[in-house]
Length: 104
Image (cartoon, rainbow, N blue to C red; front, side):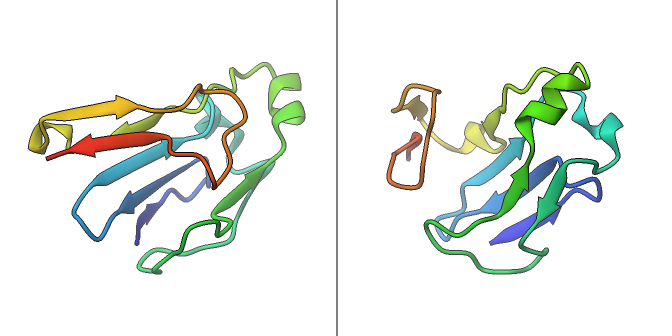
């Protein structure tokens, strides 16, 4: 479920059915772009499914503006779990890849 969609569309908060809270933040300091180059395809409170487009953004234009485009994916309630393990190389991830494993 989408629990937060930041007004400038640079970050999105998710909540899994199992209670895992995830924050995806596109780039660093990209809030300063005020939503320029970002488009959201979901809204707060919406249930989502694997492979669904959440956000799109123009990485080349964001880079041209001088921003770092690393995209942190953070389990914000990791204290509730015994471990969070990165399963995939951080390059070119798509919906078929397992990004993180959260252990109870």
